[in-house]
Image 1 (tube, rainbow, N blue to C red):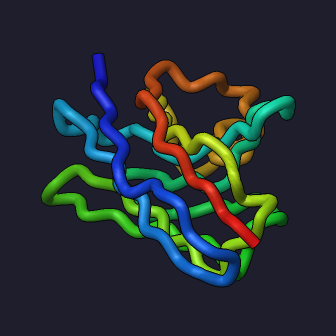
Image 2: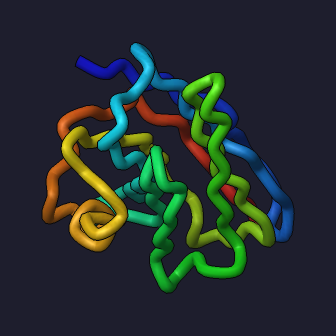
Length: 130
């Protein structure tokens, strides 16, 4: 069982930045993928960024490339999502997710949702005003 706790959401103006955090406990095993999904009202959940916890490989959705950046503090088992140049369409609830028995080659399936991650955080709201 992996417990994920997100933080860092908030209300910002378009063009601003936010950094979301996701702390995992207990410490993830060597074959874990983690990532961020988002869901806006009336829309389907969308995978935006994912990482192989051990190898550090990353995969981003095309819609966020160049604006979203993942980083990992392995010592703290904390995943960060830096979001720059925020747009109104980034408004959504952002969820951290994790899947065991997963490696870099599984990131496309993880990000698409096909892998259906086993563990989810409670979500953190990002609201962007224009």
